[in-house]
Length: 207
Image (cartoon, rainbow, N blue to C red; front, side, top):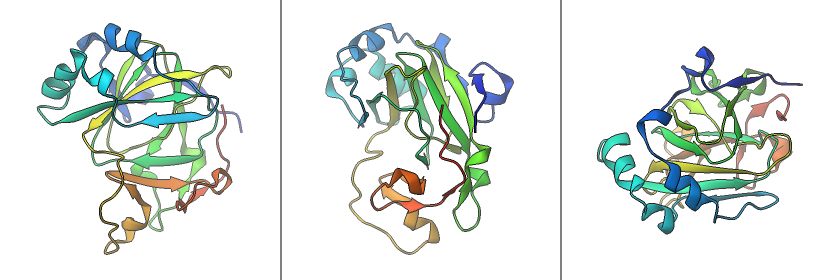
């Protein structure tokens, strides 16, 4: 199935998030990201000490997250598949250091049995330099590169998000999706993600 690549400035993105590029100066952050690895697969680092030394860290903490402690990490590499969707109890902010494509959907479309139809996924291009808030109810996972190129994307979240769980709860039905702190995940069977709930139905979307 081919998927239409929309622009993050299109009206259709507003239910998923908002563009904040004009509010924050991320030039230094993007420059520093050029020093981070861009492997043939995908690497995710929740918190990077060098990025958190930059002046933008205070802006993200005090303004963007209203005083909550945050972490600045990154997701880099090469990818062209959906593979899974995840969500948090908080917004995630992405800074595109290269052109990236986000494959996203709505948490409200998850079925009562926690399955999700991948035909509901939409694709949006974030040009290099774009700062975008992705709402807590937006399903997402690793970005994709453009035309097979590698990508670099900053990921800003409340501190300790995506770290290892200290407790694995089992009181709520949703707990089977909880794979890390503040991270609920539904995987596609083709992705073969160890320990994940394979609830994605339909094609593993490719761009």
